[in-house]
Image (tube, rainbow, N blue to C red; front, side, top):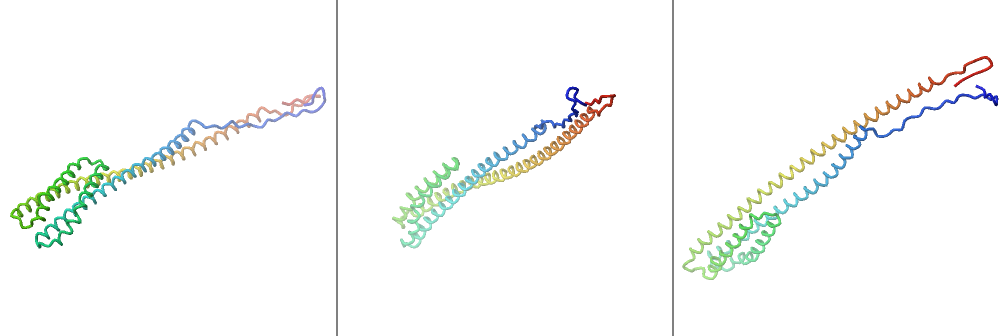
Length: 256
């Protein structure tokens, strides 16, 4: 149409369609939250699994060291017995060398075993360890030292019998300690197996959760794009419907 005052033709303006602002919908926000939570759980689970695995490994190491100490203690006692029996059978003091070499080791090994049991929190073994130490002292005081001093004394047989009873009791105590260590070691190994199984299950669950969340997010994104495209088409159609052409009248052209 023409401007009545200036005589210039004025063409109708055609505004371009505007797309609505896109934000996170409720479903998209939920999917993103699930992914964030899954990632957080994965990180925390990894730290917790590492801490438990390290603790279980340290306990197994302590139990293995304690078992080695029990074996060393038993070998030391056998060395002392062997030296004493060799001396009594031959009368040669040369056979006492294993006895004298093993004598100072026994107390040190017994103290180390006691500390290991305390570190492993196996307090039920402490009375057994105390009993081993006491019987060993009695064996040295009432059996070994008197026989070394007087190997042909009249009470030699009685002392040997008493020594056998004391040694049998020490071996029985050490066998009970070994049984406790084996039981604890099996429990520690079972705990490690359960920990690894739980870790594998958690990892599989998190992978499934990540995959499901990714699929849901992709579906939501696709639906959002389709909805936006549909709204744009509707907007274009409505704008074109509101635009009319030029109406020709005598001496006048009108348009909107």
